[in-house]
Length: 349
Picture 1 (tube, rainbow, N blue to C red):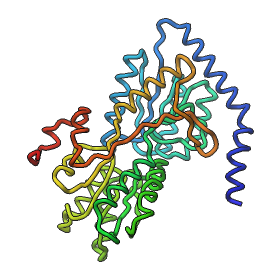
Picture 2 (cartoon, one colour; picture 1 turned 90 degrees about the horizontal axis):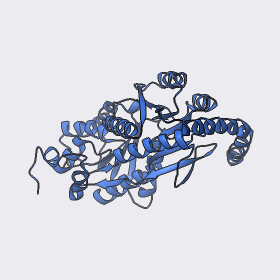
Picture 3 (tube, helix red, strand yellow; picture 1 turned 180 degrees about the vertical axis):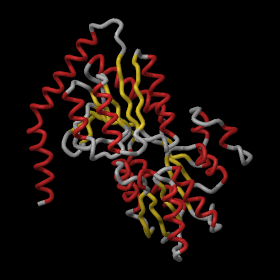
Picture 4 (cartoon, helix red, strand yellow; picture 1 turned 45 degrees about the horizontal axis):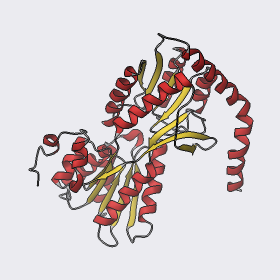
C-alpha cells in the first residue's frame, strides 16, 4: 500500500499540477524574453539564507553576490536565522519586490512548497540552493552529492576504527533534507562492516552545542565510543570539546564536513580525522551564473534531474572531496585556507 501511495503521488500530482506549472513557466519565459530586449536593466536576485550560524554560508554569500554583480545582477540577501516562518515571510517580501529569481537555502525542506508556488505564479524563477525544497517543482536544484558525503564519512570511520567499534551518529538538523541523504550514504558505507551504531542524535537548527551535550551525556552514562560521525565541522568542534574534557580527544575517530578552518587545524593536530571539503565558492558561482541565465534566457544547462518527491527538477551536482592530514594541500592549493592558519598550532611534517 505504501508503494502504491508513493506511485500515485509521483504520477497523479504532476498531472494535476501540469496546467498550473505550464502557466507559471509561460510567465517566466515571457519575463525572460522581455529582459532579453532590455539593454540597461539589471537582473534582480533574491538570496534567502537559513542562517549564518554555519561558517561556510558567509563564503557562499560573498561569492554569489560577487559573481552576480560581475554578470550585471543585484542581489537582495535575507537571513531567516533558522526560523522557517521568517524565511517564508522573507520570500514573500522578495516576491513583492518583483525579483527575477529567488535562490533559497531552506530552513525546512518540507514547508516551503506553497511560497515557492506563489513565486512561480508571479513569474519568478526559484533555485533550491544546496538543500532540496521538496514537492515544489523548483526551476533548479544545485548542490553537492550529499549521499557521497555520507559515504566518505563512513569510509573514513571504517578505515580508522577497530573491529566491532562503536559509532555515535551526531547528525545535523532533521528539517534539512541533506541530512537524510548523508545518513543514507553513511549507512551504505558501513553496511558491510562489523561496526555498531550505538546512538543517533540530531542537532535541531544545526545548534552545535547539542553535539556537546549528547555525546557528553552518553559517555557520562557509561557508554564507550570508537568513532563519532558529525553532521558538520561546527558540531565536530563541540563533540571534540566533550571528548577532551574526558581525555578522549585524539583517541576517538571524529569526522565532519565543510572544511572549516577549525576542523583543518584539528585534523593536523590529531583530534579530528577527516572533513569533507566542498568547494562552496564554485557552488556559489555556478548558482549565480545559473540565476542570471534563468532570468535572461529562461533556461540553464544541467546534468540531469532530481526527484523532489513529486516532480523531477533540473539538477546540478558537484563532487565533494574527503580531506585528511595526508591531503590537506588540497585546501591550501584552492586558497580555501592559508597554510599558516591551518598549521598555526603545529609544525608541518
